[in-house]
Length: 237
Image (tube, rainbow, N blue to C red; front, top):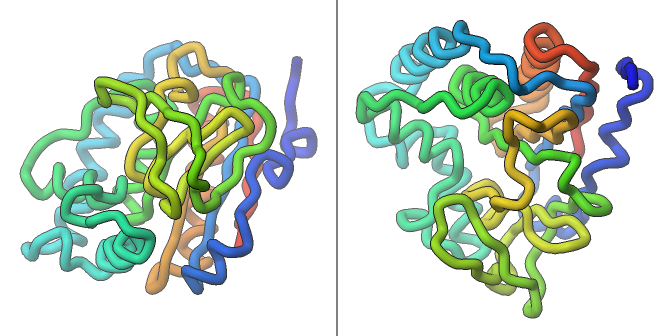
């Protein structure tokens, strides 16, 4: 099937519980929906782009601890607000920042993951993604209920249920990312076989709409240029 931007509908893929916006004023959720992709063909140049983004991020983060940076403090406060200890459960942005400040390279996973990691470093915004071919129903950013099903997370030895009140992304089966943007579910991870993808960038003040929209446009354009298919964006607020 051939896709174009007019046929890709990001608003129909992801919803945000209004209570999230009420609890976390100013939060913005940027969405890229991309279809008809080739995520299998290697793109060697992405490794060089990641190294460049790491260098730029080190300059922007400065010498201080990652936990004290103005882009990371709001995420630590948000995690604390829904009951996650930020020194134990780190946002995806803080995890990337700590890695690059330690001098470690961000590993190349597959082109889609490498692209959103590059954009995350360039703009200091949390980023993640899911394989739409494995999603059942609509993805919702919401608070976890008391009876959530257990979910197998990447790198976790056994499935565990989200804790009541934590922020999760979930489809009709269960969580696809726990503790907001802490760790992805194995079931919906992006793989070389991914043809259709949901990519998410998030912003909390002082990050604002203009930078989020610029980052979304950059990510969508890079996906189309390197992986083919069509990508469309929207911002939920």
